[in-house]
Length: 101
Image: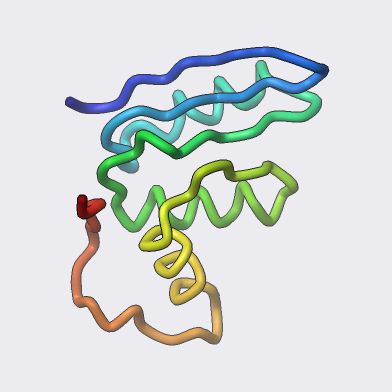
């Protein structure tokens, strides 16, 4: 499975749900969905199974720009934190991470 994007609107906000693999080549479509979801978009990552470094940097930038990340897996949070400037290398030597379990 690659990536499926679903959009749900309720109570004045839009949740953009990402399902499957989030890779760099998918980012323009995610950005377009977030643009339509304004003024209060939220990303739901509960069903994300794989991310690459471009996706992690994108998610980090989204969060820094006020987009809430719901159900963000711990491994993604860890990677986002280790990828921030001044935090050093993540130490895993890879450019993809997959959810375990």
